[in-house]
Length: 363
Image (cartoon, rainbow, N blue to C red; front, side, top):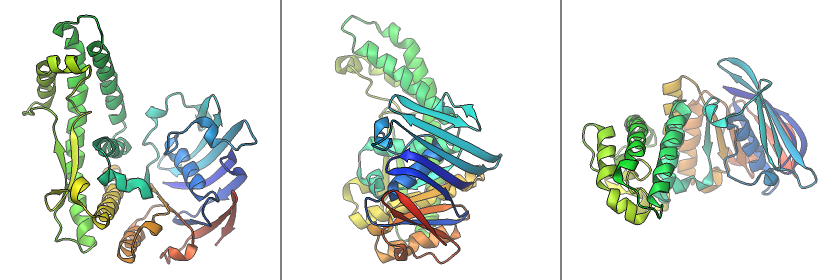
């Protein structure tokens, strides 16, 4: 999959810009606060139909204008695709190949993209919700139906929580339909998570070996928020019934996939609590490298890789490991950096110098 070109109109600090990209490696460089991340974000929006940060629509529009537009040409397995997104203060409007996209969620994962951000260390060091969200995003990129299961599960959870928080008396029988819905969708979610964790753990072992860290025992552990037996659907349903009184007292559902734990362990120790900064960076790099391989292996598609100012966060050893991994990757890559010379890539590439929301193209 390749992003062939992009056109920006009044997007962030870009007033009017059209760029044609290299099919292999693209370096986006320049001083801070010039628009490097804005360009990378626009590329992500073209691939994923939504930005990687949840902001108000007006924050994506140049100060002097009322609307912004992004257009991109993507070469995918089904041929050439044109994505056109218009952003106004009252909403975003997306067209794919000239047709209006009414439900963004139906298209998430259609164009595969893997994003590296300096803040990704929070996947390891941050809260449990961040780790669940990360794992769910990886599964959604591979399995088109997974996002619907998540939406249906959270819809049932919302309805159950609404009843639990009601001041009126509510009988246990009133919860049966929502318990069943949560258990059904929840079992699908849990099974998908467990499947992907098994594959993820295999990839992590490979990546750590490539990084000369094969002495480290690294793995992802899944911790259930309820008593799990062979039938996960029945386990969730039984736990919801059993926890009714406690949930009613608290006013929300205390067990289920939305409360399950996902831990990263290094030599049997919880990385979120005990890993050093260096170990955490290593683990994030390994996770992202594994994610690339996982998506490629399971879908047969090389995702587009976006790396935002990652090199400034890495020492030379980790930088070399990252770019050795990238050199073996056959897909398209976009990297931002303050200095082009900091990117240790020697293959064919194209570079773009960014100054005040304008790009100067270099070979």
